[in-house]
Image (cartoon, rainbow, N blue to C red; front, top):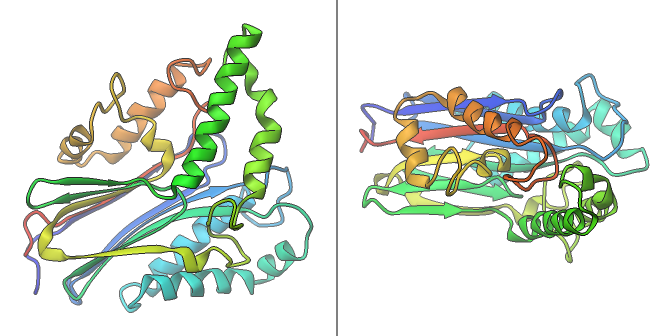
Length: 292
């Protein structure tokens, strides 16, 4: 079935000097297909950089997004294509150099939405949340890997406890959780940890894919966890409904900047418990409201 109107959009706002998020939204009316992807890179917790990008995590996140952009709309299956994307990067000159080194390699959380043959395929690996709005009005929030989120929440809880015990701000207590963050990173792609994309490809079989008939869907929103912190009571977007309402204005950079401004206005990390001043923020959406 061909659609008459389809809206897409994507935006990224860097949280720090080096942006390690990547996002893309594509549509092809000839094949009635669409693609959303958000890739949230994480560094190897060192200053090492063997790539021509600003960081190894940026290289990985952008490389995966670029691969999907290059094969769209011809590709058919997101799981198969994610394996191909990582294999291509691993077999590159830079990839071979990275896997030959000791240390923790960069990782990337990935969420992908693929509309093809009147079916919406939603894939998630890591902690990039996804919001699905159905034509019935139901809103379904898919948080991503709960184990990874739980590790982050545990680190933040320890950060706040340490700040209270030492009578310092959470930002000042950041140095006391470095070992916890390192231990969490070392759990990547282990059965007692979490699954995520890296050059080993070990986590890729754990990409969780859900499918819906396109006629059931009104909108799908994909985001990095950097945007997720801006949703909740007393925050720039009190509810997920308010996020969807803001999308009607199609000002994605403005939405991301609202969250970033709120974080920068909390320099001691008191109102927004977190482990860095401001994470990178990404949004991508697919709107089928006037289709089908």
